[in-house]
Image (cartoon, rainbow, N blue to C red; front, side, top):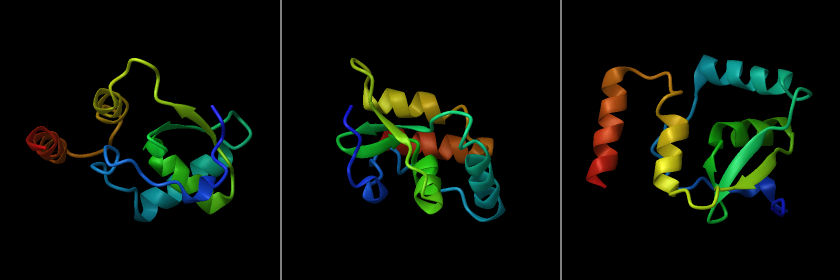
Length: 109
């Protein structure tokens, strides 16, 4: 995949937007983690329709740290909705109540 020329201005895909941004102390810790892992492997962000489908928090961190990540397309044959659900729903640190609310809102859409 061609790497986006204007990687710092990529937008967040609408399917990714249902997941809240990391903020406050958790964001500071996340930034530190991304900064510390800089030499241990390439940070990969998944794009779909020219927007960040998975890896929005990593994208934000990389822009802030001026560390260009690698980009990969959504795997062939994978539905974007299913992909986002799979890679996000089981790694979020949110309450059961918040998770259920988000799932219900997705079903309504």
